[in-house]
Image (cartoon, rainbow, N blue to C red):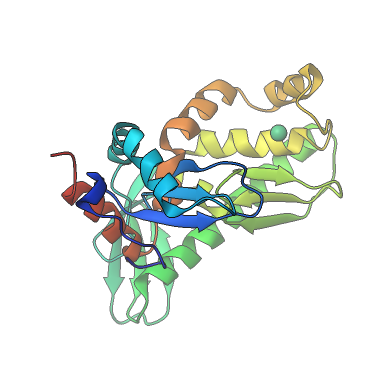
Length: 249
Ligand SMILES: [Zn+2]
């Protein structure tokens, strides 16, 4: 496997790629699904051998298979692909004579000729994310009577946004692919933390003041968020394909 993964094949009747991790802090053998690479991660505590992981995989094969099958094929950043921006499909098109340029048009991501399409689509999405998120931060902060804030883009898998004690707000650039009302909620959530650094009723009242989209957005992120995490480089798709190809007998 690529990404340093190890493939655990038919031996255990197991269909997908497996990543083995050893953790000094782990107390027991555990399994989790890595939605980004579409594989199952087996974590072993210091003294456990690999057979313990194989045993756990065997007893949970059906669960793992179901979870992997539920992962939609990832969006790949390449020419001809449909990449969502603000929740709307944008076809990646190459305009050979405008070398090095990258811009958005309705329904299209346009790239001048040149190499590394995936990285350039990613860079354009980063830029778009920064622009859209900064505008939403300014609007929601103003609604709470607060001034400008520092905003950073991250690529985190465990959280969509965060608010540091110094008031710096950070967001996953991948949110730019989600519908605008989802982005609106995530930004409203983090800006509300400037008024309340907890998830108290007062905090949620601030969120509700800023956006009507809380519940729908939380549901959308639960359902479709993993797809945002998997979008990107073509190599990720090969992992997804090998799972599909090796599906249940
Ligand atoms: Zn929060």
